[in-house]
Image 1 (cartoon, rainbow, N blue to C red):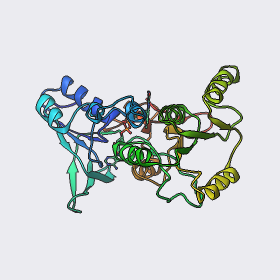
Image 2 (image 1 turned 180 degrees about the horizontal axis):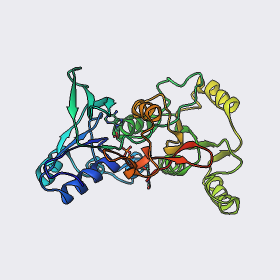
Image 3 (image 1 turned 135 degrees about the vertical axis):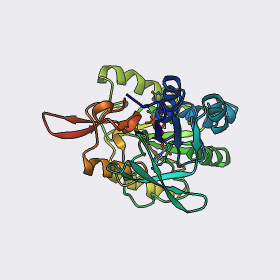
Length: 297
Ligand SMILES: Cc1cc2nc3c(=O)[nH]c(=O)nc-3n(C[C@H](O)[C@H](O)[C@H](O)COP(=O)(O)OP(=O)(O)OC[C@H]3O[C@@H](n4cnc5c(N)ncnc54)[C@H](O)[C@@H]3O)c2cc1C
């Protein structure tokens, strides 16, 4: 039971975090609700990002579902952008936050803490990963970078690495923009979540649209692409982000590491009275193997 005057702090201000904040307000008119987001934008339409890059969504504003001002006005949520949550003191029920604009750190006490810091794209540790024409796609800033590069790209050639949903959406949108696209996938089929019988027709469709599909292509092949990059064959190398690709050394997973260490991760979000996990960050303890799995909820 959340006391009426509780302070509810939410880490991460997009899909899970913004939904949790508005839901909390609907359930409790009096609570202080603070939404902390390390980036500039909250509540944007992640699912629309590839379609904006490809021009199918023409208006960038349409991606911004709710602004901090809207959330403050409509739901009385204290939205703080450019605030990176650096650590959690579970015993003292407080978090440490760095204001990314001023550089200052401060602490904030909470009654309830909801963690929705999402996941981070996997970036293979390959030479060339920091090149200016290598991208991952997760947020608005990534989107703006990719769109600017795509619009300015003269060779109109791109490589997409990873054939999950996001990878395929990027392939579709790049083809739509007249790019010659190569798709590299580590496994023997595209969209590995599907049965092979279902993936096959999709692969044929890609090939019909001129996409070069490279299956079972791992590190060596990446290096080949990266070498070819010097000849400007590679204009994009992106890795498909997703919950399973969460890179524990980056971003949200700094908190993740702390949670792993402190054992806060939950069977269900409600496992712990004060801490809840949401979205791509949600983890589940597999009681058979005693291992923790990322399990978006
Ligand atoms: C390009 C793309 C297309 C997608 N398409 C679909 C789709 O069609 N259908 C679908 O179901 N799903 C889709 N997804 C997945 C979906 O967007 C995610 O499952 C969902 O956004 C997860 O919500 P979340 O709140 O856990 O994380 P996010 O929405 O990623 O939000 C997490 C936020 O937390 C912030 N954060 C992280 N660490 C900290 C910190 N320490 N302090 C403060 N803030 C922090 C991050 O900056 C981020 O803004 C897509 C994802 C992408 C990237």
